[in-house]
Amino acid sequence: MEKIDEELLQQIADLHQVPTGSYNIRKNGKSIGSASTKEIEIVPKTNKSGIDIIVKPNVKNKSVHIPVIVTEAGFKDLVYNDFYIGDGADVFIVAGCGIHNDSTKASGHDGIHTFHIGKNSKVKYIEKHLGLGKNMGGKILNPTTNIIMEDGSEFEMETIQLGGVTSSNRLTNAKLKKDAKLIIKEKILTTDNQTATTKFKVVLVKDGASVNVISRSVAKDNSKQKFVSKIVGDANCFGHVECDGIILNNARIVSIPEIDAKNVNASLVHEAAIGKIAGEEITKLMTLGLTQTEAEDLIIKGYLN
Amino acid sequence: MIKLKDVSYYVLDEKTNAQKEILKDINIEFKKNKITVITGHNGSGKSTLMKLLMGISKPTSGEIYYNGTNITDLSVTARANLGITMAFQQPVRFKGLTVKNLLDVASAKTTNLNDVCEYLSTVGLCAKEYINRELDGTLSGGELKRIELAMALAKGGEVFLFDEPEAGIDLWSFEELIKIFKKLKNKTIIIVSHQNKILEIADYVLLLNNIGYKMGKKDEILGKIENSKCARLSEV
Image 1 (cartoon, rainbow over the protein chains, first blue to last red):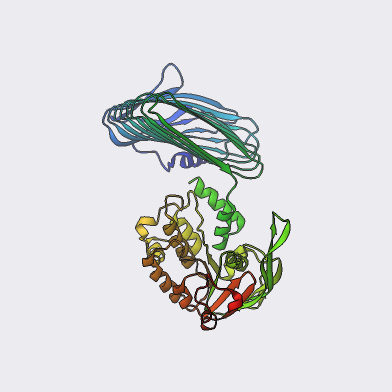
Image 2: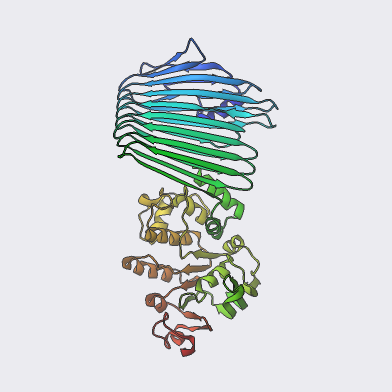
């Protein structure tokens, strides 16, 4: 493994060495390391690029890492990963993609992830995205996440894009059955001329289902972000979407909410606030000895923490 | 310690488009290692004066000296690094920054649980309960106010500016608040307050009113007024 591979893996998946338990590391469209355990199987697909991750029922406190790195200039990766989470399981999944591109060609990764979350199972899923490299070569990431949640299941998804990604287009679709609970936390930082679009569609089809989407974003320089969310409540259910954005320089953030209550017992809430950093926050930190720039950096760091 | 020379502060009255006088021709000195309490009715310019001392606002005219050095044009950061510390009347909320993050900044070091405990116990809070709490809307006004005071103590300095420190603090911790000021006896303390208990610990009192100001030793000023909120400068 090359030094840049290690750097990318460390940043996107906190991997300092080969992970224990199940894992699959994909580089430039090919698996460069993979391991299954009796609790979590990783099976390569035969009809298209990608893997099936099969978590056996009632497996508890286990983790699986499936990071992707792209280091070949101009390489466009497309992968389909399907997760089958057995009933009653409780697992931690780390995904994410890092692109290193020093060229002027565009490199990209489109990851299509589909989760089948079994009854009463619990999943925490982290996906970090990162772009590294000089020059203007594109570092493009377009993840799609489909989530089908059975009765009583819980899914917490944390997506983090903290720099260097020139363009991203994230799609998330979820369908929640009885008492299913979905939490989505999204953090995005864009700079220069980068663009980032995220679209969420969550359908709550059975009583007791709940979703909470929390998006915090910072757009600097000439970057642009777009946040589109649609929550459909078709039962006695609860949905909450919170989109907070900080803009600096000539950046722009657009937030488009849609909440659709199809049942009289559906309770849906949308909150959005976009603006520059509050002057009083900067002033307070300056009274503690920070310069204005240091204060702004700390506020952004905390905001995206 | 801190001298104001002919300091005036005006704002533009949007209704009349005329300059509105907030402070006019202030010539005073805050004495080293003494407690000065600034009092006066609402709108008399008390908080404005604190902002001028911290550098958050600039005087329309006049000069401010710190230990003989003209600091009128110094930034907030530069004044903070000189040793001027301020606790705000309305604590600022931060999304994502924790009590520990802010105490780290204030104390200019990476604090551990013991450090945080030292700062927070002084203001009546349990470190374990608050160290990782965000300074956002989940904290009550009283909690935020105490953390604001803890930040000022963690930062330290030579001159402490407390703008209505008692606001939002319950009676139990009011006594603790007085203890904090007494502990800082070897520092220069400037407090904006209406409270008699705080006025009682003052060495000097600055009374502001919309027709001027009066500064003197506590007994000299307080002896002539019963209630600072109702006082008329002409009566002093």
